[in-house]
Length: 309
Image 1 (tube, helix red, strand yellow):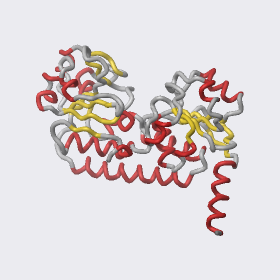
Image 2: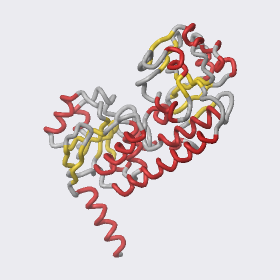
Image 3: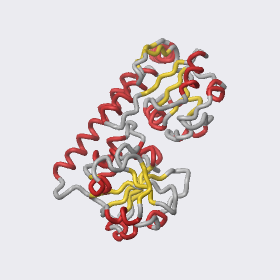
């Protein structure tokens, strides 16, 4: 009985004790309660699930589908096109959102309504992921669990470094495609969400090697000739779990079938959040991508760990 009483007391403190959190803008935010959370950002929802507080999420943005139970929660829209009324209808005590969330007037309306709004750092780097985990953990009163996630991330990265050190030969050339239009080949270069995972996994961007550093930023349409000139050994594409995906459709994109990767059928498809979310799983994602590039052949489908059966 004493153990149960102590557990309930700690839970009450975690939900109700005010904490102060410095968010991505440098603003110090007082979080009076994390009992009812609106999560805006797939990686934030992912972290909340791993912290054991998914049951506190009352609504989520369109891009959040991990942990799986959040899909049943109300959808408040795309992270950059939020609606204050839709969020306030869920009576939130806390909004945790990626730093690019908005528009700003909506966030300010939420603050005026008395909701604690914490903008979470969302830098696509390992240190950025650690800051993200720690900010989310602090806001929901789970600092110790947050440090557990950081240590798990560091273990994954240590295992990855060991693999990279023992591997021999040049870095593989990887072309990162975004297959959103069957008539055009959209190639993602520097600053594209998820592009950093290629380097983290011990490979190199094929388009960067051919076009030069900074030549392709974000995702742009390239001609079939430019795609062939990149000479990728591996094609990397994201897939969305709730949408149809076909390796054959990737091969039909202009220029892809004529590349070394296309001729060998070397296509790696990764769950979009796993590839580009930079959540607590980024170390595992880099390990999986490294394995798909250097230890496997042919077509490889990599689902998010939380969705594997």
